[in-house]
Image (cartoon, rainbow, N blue to C red; front, side):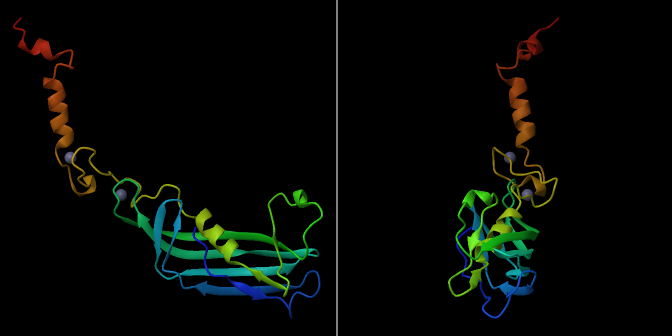
Length: 182
Ligand SMILES: [Zn+2]
Ligand SMILES: [Zn+2]
């Protein structure tokens, strides 16, 4: 996903003691996003609902992102819509750890002004919940490989025609039989 604008939360007057928590909700007014080589449009931006918790050596951000998105069906290329409800879980350390390998799931750092930027966690959650294969409907018939017609709109006739061509072709081992007069 392309980098989105920073979503900065100022913690200077919050989360002073371990266990303190701070809810953070908002909406990103984004028209769309991309993931891999695919582009998606968003109906109404990306909403996020996150709780920040002081966890001793850092701030744990957990929550959810929601969006309604649309992209091209992988079979017929028509528009297909889907709902995103992706989970956010990100750890922001107050200081660079002595042993980074201790944090297997990775971490970010709290900024020098005691701010954190949720944009990376939000875009990761959106991408994670974007379907790997997008279909306009589960039984989408796709496009005809020969003429490109959308087979959801009816049979283009190519499949029947090519079956007939094969029956008549030399590649059909039974083709010779039909001229046999037994
Ligand atoms: Zn389709
Ligand atoms: Zn066709």
